[in-house]
Length: 191
Length: 191
Image (cartoon, rainbow over all chains, first blue to last red; front, side, top):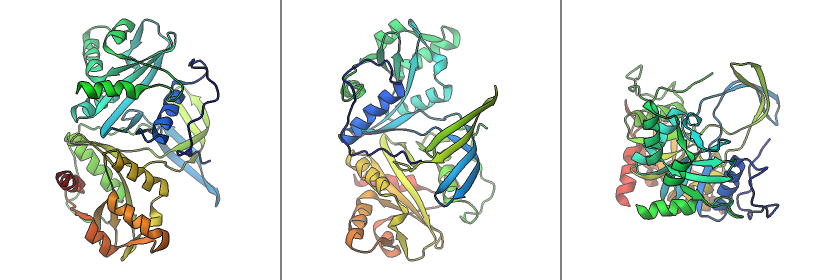
């Protein structure tokens, strides 16, 4: 029932294989964030999925069992936290497309949220995982915003080439699994 | 099923009665955060309750129904976000005690989390609602930390008088419902 990871434990990985095959993008990010947390580099958590709970049973003293619940539409992004005193906020998406990232993958209120965070002085972005290329890109909200604007009358996706041009490639490694804070360092440096 | 509030709507309250009777502390904070959000003052959200989902049914195309799930222990605080470029993180607790706030009300990993946020340059605190007094206090983590330290060998609670001395009273009003960001302004000013 309780699934609370021991945060103080040293980061361990079973294999030395850096390939992403077999590990979900979400798990890659979670492992990365656990590494950052246990090494006191950054405090970034995935938000729980919002659930509308309708019915709860109490079969014993040991705990409640939720018997009826529904998924709600998230009003924010999946990840947020603090790094070097900065508020960080991002959404992570994967695609099996080779040549483009469809904007329909991100809810419009998530885009609004990312823009708001940027306006309030935070660092916000999307992490996009191109499964076929086995490549992860970080695209800042300021560019995402422009592509969303274009999509109103133009193409509804960002091409792979555009992401290569405007985004940063995120290196994959052993620990951390994906080094997205190295890219955030560049963004902070730019100011 | 979907319970996504219309964020752009103007803040509305049914009555002019400022008394907290009849409204949960959580709802007071949520109303406050909606006000801050819709007026573009701050972006602060309550995190969903973490749930371990075990069984999901798909009775129709319209949506999934969660049929078995369990509450997990939260590893962080309930609220976080951004205000004036600062990362904000806090936990909200209410007590029916008159003379003290029992520290057992806050999970130890939540205290660790608040301390970490402070160490990383964020603003973190607890909001404590004394129901009997109908008073809300904001206590910064740096003081909470000392009381937690004391509790190892000494008293396991913070007295009402101590909270009055070390905390800030949070004014209650119409919109926003509880003006905790005014206190955060003071904390920012102090540096």
